[in-house]
Image (cartoon, rainbow, N blue to C red; front, side, top):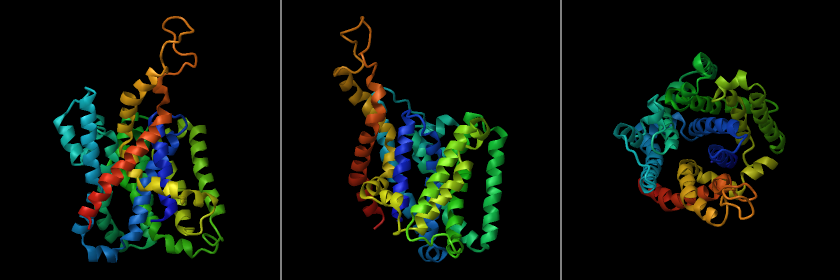
Length: 364
């Protein structure tokens, strides 16, 4: 694992969680983060599993190893979510949605009530599973083609995605359906694969990757990502329909290249990303992503009542009856403060007590 890529996983996972609880200004980083997760998966798989290793391992073993990384965590979070919903009296089971969700087939539906059913963040695992299962087939096919042909294929896929979003990309329901749909999301994954194939050609260039450390390149990567964010904010009406994927592919690709080219030669930003705290968070980033809904429930039904008991959101003794406390706060307004500690604690416990033991059992 390239440490800086793992560090970026942590950063994007935390931003996604904060965005989902209403922290303003993180919408663009959430979209960039989702593209990063899929592109990084294709990028890293292409380096770890070249065609020669796939031939020796076989499709069945490859599929088993990668399905075993996703299903146990998915089933655990599904059971925890159903139990939590039952405890708070909000459990409503629809048999079709539950069956599709349990088998990670729900992202193939274009119905919001199905692909976001139960623990709604499980759509990510369903779409990632499709990418994993397609990887050996894609790798063998692409390996027979020249790099320029692979780049042309990526450009064709980009144009197809552009057209799909241009047709009705301002329709929120339509855009969300495409956002989670596996045949659309696999474009990010393929871009990562082709980027990995281009590494020898990129490294042969006279300038790129030749610096003593990665400080300048890291600043360029961060500046490019910042420029994409600011461009989207400045031209919201123009770029809205393509905000879910297209405008993030270039900055994410540059981030991945810089992480690879300056691995073990990190600059200031890279050293922060490679630090032990971010590496630890990166190692549990899947759990952080999958448990954010449960963390919110823990806050809403356990922490918020305690905060209310301590005075947050209670009528002020200094005002008129019915007035809230002088600071105007309610316990639920504090969820951005509490969500990360709760989510990280749950993620660590699940990773330590469940994910690791199951992985050792299934993948030994």
